[in-house]
Length: 436
Image (cartoon, rainbow, N blue to C red):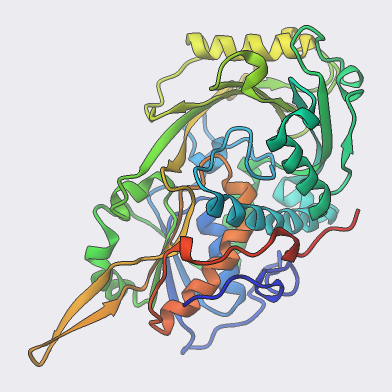
């Protein structure tokens, strides 16, 4: 049975991975070979981790990050504000999944924080540490779930934590919106367009082979053919909503989201350098929230919406739900009524890749049946899955990549796989911390 993560199993920057060209450990001709299916943030951070451990890696994706005015891939649409689970626009239906996600989030926090600490890397990657303020329609001490979450955030080592209702007045929020309490901390804030370009270039510099191709059908049924075609020992699957078909997982479903992009140069309203969000409670609805996130020097994102089961990307700026979204943001922070739209890319929309059973970081549990000399043998699959991250892909990325490394090592040994729910999640406090 797989063992739970320990301190030394958690990946750390400079020890296990390095944001520099070339792998930390160069592969030999005998090093294991891995095919990664999926070119989003999960696929690329997993590729980076495997490459620095000395694996040969091929990344296969139907499309890559693009920067025109047309639809961009899901990893680019994300607001990419790091959040401690459960996220404002995320969800967890079981405690085991939530505990895994907390550990993954803290691993990712520390790595993104380290990248942002280098001016050169921060500029190249688009990763910065900025203030993130979370407002609440009731006192946190009166809400057991929010109180527990706040206490865990304080204990696990995020930087710059401050619990103070004065933040409401300090940030000039409308008193009529309903916020009565708040806390803030520093959080990785990622320009996803820039970061995706950087990640793709980084894994290519470390030796990854990039293949543009669309796969169809259950990967399990074509595993042996794919392994032979690409000459690999293991297949990693990380396609988000593609899990519906590529993993035969009928629990996958989309949650549509949308973001308005406005100019944040200080001319129309005071330049916003910090993220601000408030849960749906204050808006009087479960699926419409306020989510304001600075993307880079001149772009501010206004959100957000949560539409479960809706994967059609046909929203427009004048769609009623998007008009309500902008109106909420303006009521929450009145100076936004003067905001100008980004003329190049005013509106972004995407489908967050959720699944009913939460994030899946797990080996394929089905077995191949081989017939040798008239006898039947059950052979473990060498497919490993990492999908269903919902709106938290950037927040969980490196933590999931660390677990994927362990699962790849298990698969190479053909150890019998176990379900994710049978693995005891490491305690959040077992993860490396950032000192306050």
